[in-house]
Image 1: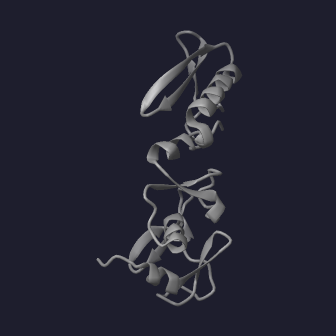
Image 2: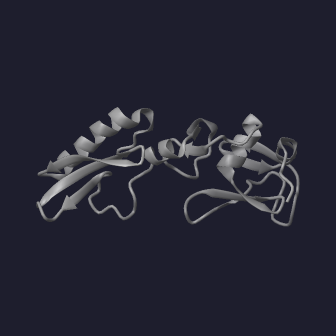
Image 3: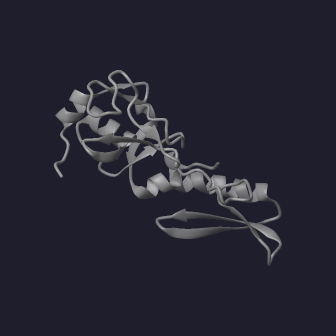
Length: 163
């Protein structure tokens, strides 16, 4: 399959308020002046263009900068459908993971915090360069979260997300 060019994307889309807008009709679902793509179940916007599926944030990066992102495109605010340019940045996989929201499986309400039944205490840990660092045991989930937050700010810097 042929790789799309920057000209293909420029000729087909306008960019407005975080959305790609169809400039020309490319198929039965593309309507000139309408927002391109659809929201996937995982929260990302996906666009079918030239018989291939693209994540909107990657296509937007290509449209604006004329080249594909070197790594992953991170949504700074954690909202996967917020594709405003000021919310996107090219980051490593590790940096993108540091900026992740807490998972749906999290039952404590705090990122990086787990209940340790053997000790009957709350435990906190953080991952840096694929290695888990245990931050200790705490009497409350909030104390464990405070330890995680402090470590995240120190170890993850601008990519730290504590919620």
